[in-house]
Length: 330
Length: 221
Ligand SMILES: Nc1ncnc2c1ncn2[C@@H]1O[C@H](COP(=O)(O)OP(=O)(O)OP(=O)(O)O)[C@@H](O)[C@H]1O
Ligand SMILES: [Mg+2]
Image (cartoon, rainbow over all chains, first blue to last red; front, side, top):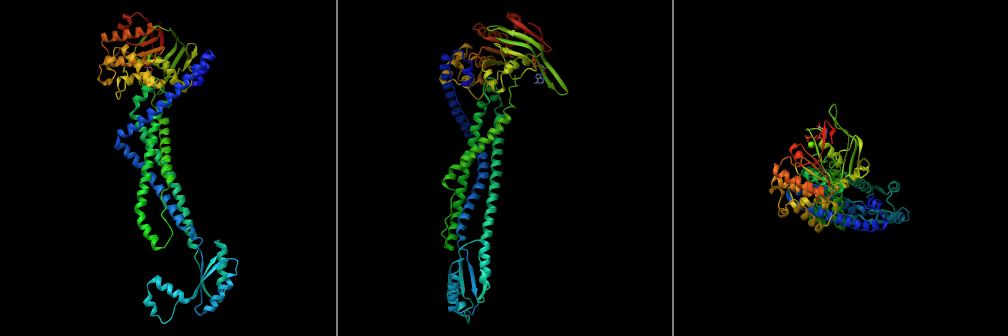
């Protein structure tokens, strides 16, 4: 705008001064209109509290769903990330293996490159542990002899699936070995499942973000419709499209932002709700795990992101419908 | 000030078209008050819409101080309209704000500060004799008063060009005369005024130049 004035100004020196004043005036007017638009948008929102609450709630729910799911997902990932390190082979020896033979076998295998360490569990230790864990103490005492085989817990140096399977086969081929159980497949399955759920959450996020944009488009479209006369008058007295657009953009941003704030609240409330049973569960499993919240950065990021979605919706609505409102009413 | 060069406007219609204006050539001078008359459908409003750039001519050129309106891009239309005050039969006031805020709208759009805008609004309302009513809602005013608020809004940023489409359409002769006196005052201070009207009595009473349209053709000027 200042540039076009510059072209027209007849004398450069005088023109230069005028440009500066115009430029400053324009900037001041622009800022003033932004302020007025924001205020106007806000007053219209709180002027129709029920309608506003409905829109904001729809947006909040649409956002709380993916936000809540990703919090759950983060928790699942945190809870399972060190299970890899726990991958081990339970090597059950035949029942007649003597404690000495068991120790020797363990010593021999400890030399192997692919084995990090071995825990020796004698038949007696196995029985004690089983009694303590199962609570069948007395019933087991009644048995004529210890039914549990000697056990070697083999912790491998790697979690690579191929290496583990080879190791499993080699250990199983020893004559004293009854059965080798590889406790890793289910971990892999779990990780694959978490990965799948993560993808689903991404798709869901995109779908629901689109829904938020569409909700705002529709709400703003109605707003434009109800302010048609005002838009016509503004256009006739020389209001630019930007001038007409501005209050609607602020309205869209407010819808999104408020929806985002509310969605964060919803997720936090849901976390508090599930927090107690989860804590009890964790105690039962003697785990170090602690429930991960929505995170401080997300408390800010989600409302801003939602605000951007609202801005986008408003922009789409206004650029599509502002042309419809041309001052034909003469 | 404004020059029409062989201007035509053709509207597409279902199954054909309609020539609202055909090869109209004329010139309006600064400080001149001109009537634009003709039967209903003759093309009066279309001519005003072309000046407002609500429509663009199908053929021909409109020049303002030698500059062609055809050259103004769509993005420049809003700024062009700030040179024009427009008065409508149905005044188009906004009933969700005061008289003052209605009149201030063109100034706010043009970027005046609130204080400067208020000063000019008061001057414009004083000019149309409504200074005392600036804090009322326009709904509370009579038809003639509403029309005068519309005029105040049209002239508040001192445009060099004032257009009016049936400005006295709804008013009795006394009020019409008041409005006409206002338009004459503006012409006297150098504003180019163009008034589209059916009102032959008005045209005869005030001796000004009169452009007459018939079926989109200029038949008398
Ligand atoms: N947007 C449009 N699309 C199609 N035809 C139109 C359009 N606007 C006007 N017309 C036609 O163009 C012709 C001129 O219309 P215009 O409104 O300029 O007449 P007018 O002289 O202002 O009439 P009135 O005195 O009734 O207001 C009319 O026949 C009208 O039907
Ligand atoms: Mg008309």
